Length: 175
Image (tube, rainbow, N blue to C red; front, side, top):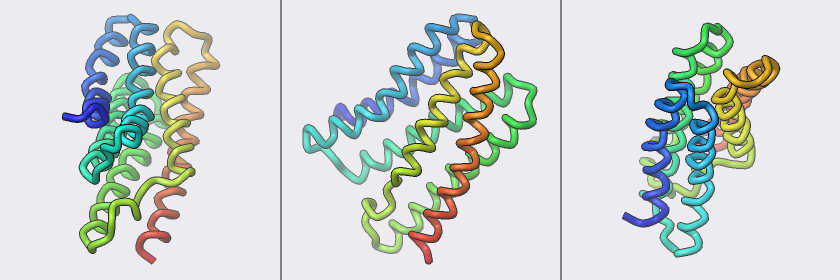
């Protein structure tokens, strides 16, 4: 397996120590592994372009890894928090991720190239906001309450951006 694809798969596998460490109250260690996993999101594409190993499979694997990484963390976070805002935000984000994935598959099945359904700048901002909110959540047990509130605010904001971007993608790709 190529380095870029290995990095994508590692992002999924790193969920296990992230959650395990958090559940065993190793919050900083959980955050450090989370940051490393998040960096693989950038590095997989960087190494694919650098080594000329870009492929449709690699692009789809990267998107799958992104969606699983965020969705699993959101579902786990919902399980750990007693917050209707997190529950609603998680439902919005996960349903958007599934919708975008199916929309991409639909477009590709109509003989279009995968490059036509890449994420845009708004999608990248959405991901950065989600990743920041999820990362902050990992240290909320050892930080002041405003960090927890900021984490929730970022997740809510990313849920709103998620749906805005879904509508934007739908209008670009289908209409």
